[in-house]
Image (cartoon, rainbow, N blue to C red; front, side):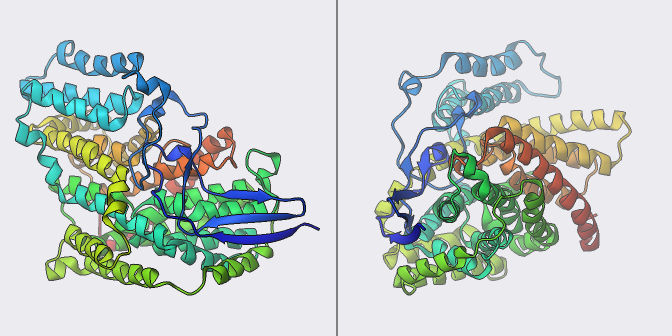
Length: 551
């Protein structure tokens, strides 16, 4: 009988997948021999390029949430500049508004022109005539060249604290992967809970929730920690990607982990980049949440924990694995931990730094330390003690890319708010809803569902938030929905829709790229899980939020 040999491979840590290229990565190297199978599990993950798999054309803009790697060689189409048809369609969207749609009397010419530029920018994010950063820069250039905005206003968002907090979170994610700390934590949970397939999925889901508040990148957690573990466990059970045996174990574990990750990200304010952005955008509209870390966790805790507990079980029934028991998993995990050796100095530094950072995020308001300052202190410690070096930070190309295009998008959205476009749009929608005599709970349900399912058009959670969060929050307020409830519910949805499709988020693309789940199953399970989450958050959340006094 074939034996299993586990080899933990220490390889130089390099960047995680970029938001725009996360589909091009593989995470596991296999060396089959005639009577043994060697599983090489990276402690510091070296992620190598692989081809993009069956993505729709709208994915050319890709995603922008987390984790970095060197940019791959540009595709042949991209080498020739912008793609003609997406370029023309993106420009047409804005030009049609600017020159064909009559400007409402209450909207200034400056605001209407900025809206047309913004719509062309958003259309480009969906259609992808150029990489998202390049297209955003063109939008920024248009605002300045047409004198729609002065230079200082156009570039104002580059000093936004939340955007810099997101950038620093990329470096924290690199530290988790480079030191192997995230891998170690997840392996312990496999050792403790992995005797059955269902227990294994719970172990992986709980371990992600455990490290999520200190590793604010869902894509980094997926690609750098959990996918390598899922693949090694699946292959050891004879479950291979792109093969009928995928449904033995791997397909279920991949989907269970993906669907549970939305609840992990929704549970903590610092578990995902888009969470921080949502609260900043809410504050700009006038919705300020006191003691945000604690308030966020308190409001999300019950529905998110119920979602974490229910999701693996329901998927186990809906999409059952052929293998029900995995008695070898704890032994494999124990062997891997043995090969990893004791906790290293850098891992201890990472643990201490993350405890300090999370503590400051929780209690920072009380002692006067902002979230971004807490993150800066943490990064400084990692640099001073050699856990990270400046080369690591420079190589996080997606961090700097995100700083550029994200600041542009947030800046344009903020100027639309300042110029009155968002309030005008929200009043129009509110009037339509009132014409149907909808109560605020009914309007809340319609707007939340609309915001959620529009994500089928987006390949990035943060791009979706930057484009639509402010407008939808203003619509909620105009319809009479309580302010804090509106702001937080939209933000929680911004995490949950990340598993709708294979392109809806960085982590979704990473898991789909593993080759264990067929595309029809991805869409079917994405919609099914969305319905399950709607029931959990709609029912459990409604009772819990009433108890907390949100409405």
